Structures are given as structure tokens and as C-alpha cells.
Amino acid sequence: MVEYRIDRRSGVATYVQIVQQTKQALRLGLLEPGDRLPTAREVVEATAINPNTVLKAYRELEREGLVEARRGLGTFVRKSLSTAPADSPLRAELDAWALRAREAGLEREDVAALFTSVLDTHFAESKGDA
Image (cartoon, rainbow, N blue to C red; front, side, top):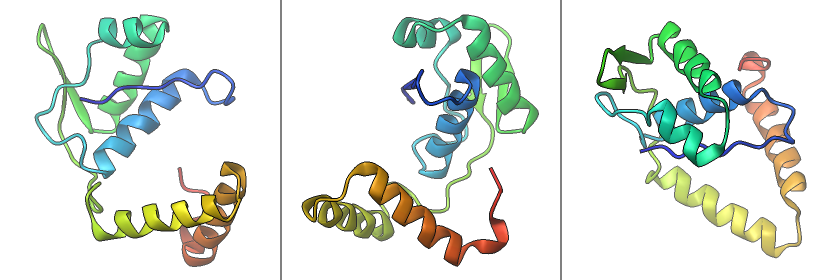
């Protein structure tokens, strides 16, 4: 089950953070078709956000065809976005690289800037996609 982490200082709307974290879990294979998302009540208890914010995020995911609400049962994953599961060799290589970057004294923001620059170089055609 996915556990949402809300960063109130990020400047990103809370419901967008839930949508993004759900999509990330779908891409990493942490959520698969048939899995149930946490109920709005469970998310509210864990994150202290408004239940309407959770419902707004779930409606957005439903609009995109990624989840479906089943009356009285909850919200379930309909479709996976997984192409690079969390246990893939690429993940292990990236993990080792991040460890080396940290040992080299880079800060998180330095790594993010470097990684974004490399992504922009190799995925220029999809720049601006969310």
C-alpha cells in the first residue's frame, strides 16, 4: 500500500502531490491493477489533510483512467504505469550512483540539478511533460 508524504513547503498543491506519488508508485510497480488505495480516512489520519483533498486527487486519477471507485469498497488501481520496477538493475545502478554522489559531498539539490540536466539532455523531446 502506498503511504503519502505531504510536503507543505513544496509549493505543489496537496492533491497534486497525492496524484504524483500515486503515479510514481504505479511506475515503480509498487501499485498494481487490483490494489486498493488507502481510504480518504486513512490518508487524513496519516497526513492531517482535508478529506476533500484526497477525494479530489482520487477523482483526478479516476479521470485519467488509472483508478476506479467502487461504491462501498474503496478506490482500486485499474492500470499500471510500470516499465522500470523498483527492483530493476537500473534502480540498483542509480542507487549506487546516488551513494557515490553523496560520498562526494553533493547535496540533494546538487544531485537533483545534475540529474535534471542529464534528463533534459536525453529526453529533450518530452521536456515540459508532467
